[in-house]
Length: 435
Image 1 (cartoon, rainbow, N blue to C red):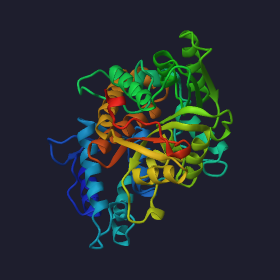
Image 2 (spheres, rainbow, N blue to C red):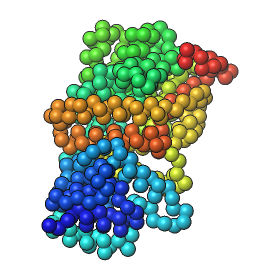
Image 3 (cartoon, one colour):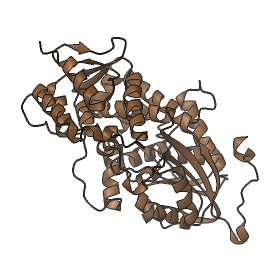
Image 4 (tube, rainbow, N blue to C red):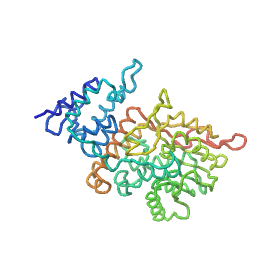
């Protein structure tokens, strides 16, 4: 018996310079580490070979998606301990100590790499799981490449999304006025909050940028009497949304298009909503995005921009995308600090009137989505693939913790295109939409 678990734990602790926070179970049946902790199960030596050839997050992600790594026990606790270790090391380094992501690349770890290679056994690394994005064409955030990125994430089957999101089919954080509210009620509350912030009135024109499966335009047309246009780059989303509109008898008031926001030319609109879409725009394109939306609004028109935000870093130019998210979840997605978002909107001409942080709401929302996925796991695997289901479980659970631990946030930014003379048409207090 090689006691692979003991050797793996020792190697990890030497490389990281800290006790490994989980129990480890290896392919040979051996175990090591605290018995009362969740177990990181290494099912196959291939997982170790992936890490050796691609050290860090991407190697771990590939092993997870391929089913070579698993967590036995509380997934949230396991991820919290691992990501907490990563976060602390990433945030500390004024003393020059190596960051965790660099530890496996430090020359001092070459000896450890040789020991790990002996444990992993001979052979080249397995190919990446098929769910990974490998080849991308076109300029970053060009319309062609954006369509490819959106298709990778959203065109994986509407039935799969319905299983995860529930009947609301809303793929952004809900609004839990009561922590014990159902996910469906909380999503309805969020849709209504958006409509109230936009001050929608009967007969007005609403543009929903990144309309998803049509939930917001349906709510706005049914409850506020607007004429709504929803645009998306996902053909599967558009087909689903059009059916919902037809079933609701609202085809005369709601238009669903497969269209890039840069191609919309039939303004002006009275209001624009962008809910969970701006994360796909990209830092270098954000001024263009803000400018397009500004030009599409009439004087006094309002924009509600609902967007995930990351924390600022000392060197913004050196900021790196999360490899797992970029390869498996949101290709080419980029997060920005909320201050940057506000600045870009103001540079485009908007007056920013309100910023509301909804960080805690997203943690609750994601835990609901994970619970939906786990409760119908066999069906989810059938609808997508084992790898795709594993991607979603990992990313949603990890993101829930990131919101809860204040590593990322989400904000609703309400802005207006002021009319001539500076008139905003905005109420003097928040009571208009909070009442």
